[in-house]
Length: 254
Image (cartoon, rainbow, N blue to C red; front, side):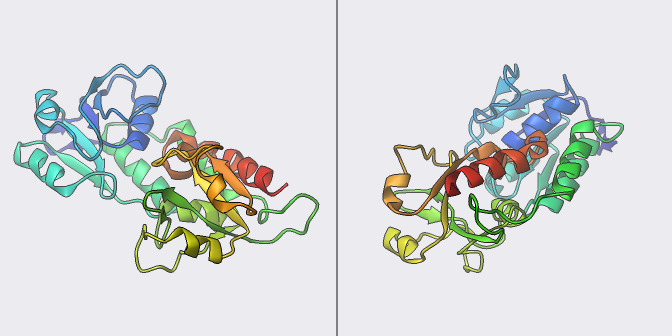
């Protein structure tokens, strides 16, 4: 597939998920990525700043045929500045797992892939045949309620219409703020406790929750420490996400 100016051979990614997808599928096409693009390991490309504060001039100097971005992770003023500099920008919108597969296919085709990569087929297969709802050890299989903080000071949680929320829902976990008017609402800690979830899901990004930083706020409620890459990234990690996230959720309920 070609961009408006011909074949795409130089790609800059402003999204860690898409960086991994492009690097794994089209080795050599990726010439720039953000400081937060940590996969694949050892990625040797120019670094152009963060997802929220990319160095537009640095991107322009790389002379990319295409910049891939996301409407949630990147800021519109930065994308507008790139377009004004004559750079072609493809912006993805991912709110659920099926949408992730559609957008990944679109991005990879725009970057020049000639067919679907094996990892994308494997990821779709992993999500097409999931086990039943999360069960506590020895207990009946049923859906689990959860709150899912993504930040503290102030506390922020998953709200409506989020990719991570859909990932959890497909694994049998219903987060309690899925109907909130905001996508990432600020909720006082006392309200989160009073919501009385079965489980608190604590990812290690964007806030890096750890065993020492997070669970102590929810004494008496099981807490699942999960990989943010598997919960929030849409790329090659999708192939193993059901297993990795599912294991963390079950371990928390034992």
